Image (tube, rainbow, N blue to C red; front, side, top):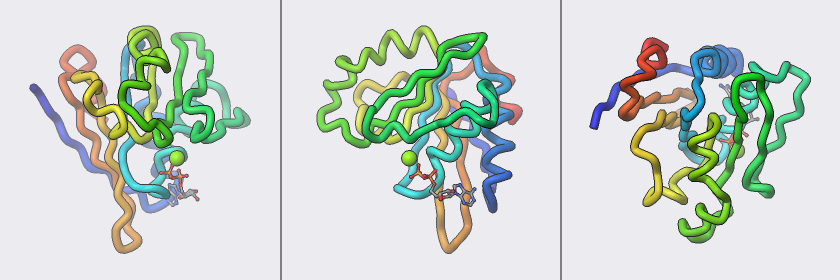
Length: 153
Ligand SMILES: Nc1ncnc2c1ncn2[C@@H]1O[C@H](COP(=O)(O)OP(=O)(O)O)[C@@H](O)[C@H]1O
Ligand SMILES: [Mg+2]
């Protein structure tokens, strides 16, 4: 198991945008981003800037809280935005077809805690925090040997 940690402070949305765009720029098919943290810490905001890097700033990016899965077509790969908040049983991840999604596209997953038993070992965990008004995110690269350029961000 290899882990590399980076911490980024996110005092405003511009900082979230800059980080999301730099990760989007080096994203490759098969990359899985776990977006962790409590309600309101900025997970959907990060996903929105990541998706808009590919589709333009006018792209409407709704929170997938109710649909669970939203897909977007980019030139390079299908991009999936998933919110597992409403998942009641981790077994339901199979019904969503996540295994196929993981192989064929780039995935952003909010509330991945709901499927931890089935979490892929190779992934990028972003843990968002908001404490005493200070926002930050810890980016953890798990087993990302062959996509080393991510770890420079
Ligand atoms: N870096 C940031 N600085 C200031 N406000 C932010 C930042 N990131 C997100 N927000 C704001 O926080 C609120 C909740 O963000 P959201 O992305 O919906 O959280 P989550 O998806 O984690 O529940 C929104 O009003 C959003 O504009
Ligand atoms: Mg959200």
